[in-house]
Amino acid sequence: MQQRDSVFYTIAVAAVLCVVCSLAVSAAAVRLRPKQEANKLLDRQRNILDASGLAMGEFGLPANRLSRGQVADLYSRVSEALVDLSTGKYNTELNIEEYDPREAVDKPEMSIAIEDPEYDLGEQRREKVARVFFVKKPGDDRIQQVVLPVYGKGLWSTLYGYLALKSDLRTIEGLTFYEHGETPGLGGEVDNPAWKSEWSGQKLYDESGKPASLVFKGPAPPENPYAVDGLSGATITSRGVTNLIRYWASDDGYGPFLGQLKEQIAAESADSKPDQGDK
Image 1: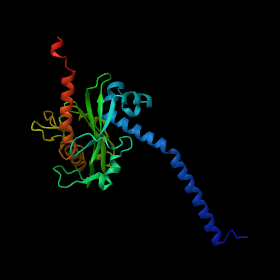
Image 2 (image 1 turned 135 degrees about the vertical axis):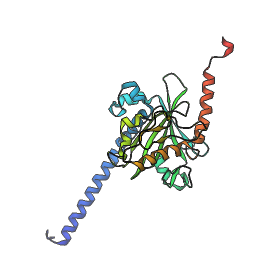
Image 3 (image 1 turned 90 degrees about the horizontal axis):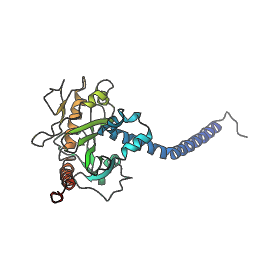
Image 4 (image 1 turned 90 degrees about the vertical axis):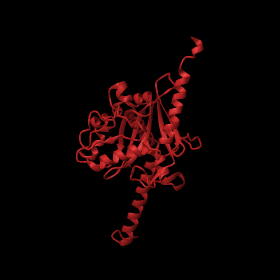
């Protein structure tokens, strides 16, 4: 019989425990995966509802204080599409339910290198195809808002968020950040609801069509329609937010798509007008 205080016995027990624990963790991961995916989807929907202002507009609350049922009801107004960022055209080849833009960034065949951009995103690559979101009113097929995923480097981390635009595609409806590693109380103030609310109504482009939104250094001049207040003690994070918004608004980001969407919205608006011959 093997001695319990022998080296072999100790190693054997440790090995058995490792195997048992590994099996338990693996089983838990597999069993909980559907719930994790459901929570991930719920979190994405809540962030889009916040960026679009639907949660606050309908319930006077941020989306994280709404029930699953309330989120599902509001999100029924949102549709999704995949867009080729280079051409601006819709991509119908990829499975929209399974496509993950963040995984695509790590795959050379599904991403491109970011080289000499007009606005420094701070990233080396971006996905070729992005997921975009459309907000419509109940019973109205016309697009009221478009919500665009955005990301870029701050001081310590990549900031991930959503930028919502009104149907003129020039006016910002809202901006949210749902994931980052910036310093709490400084760059982490990108999460501050009061600061995020400053973006609503600001202009994304100047009169020449050039991306002009920015985080101002210090208090933003009231007459400046493009600027919001700077984040105190967070110059690099503020610069990162300015750059990421301008990058994604430019032709390197969603510019080609927004150009085509403008024509689509104009056509929808023309189709919805009463026929002059019916008067």
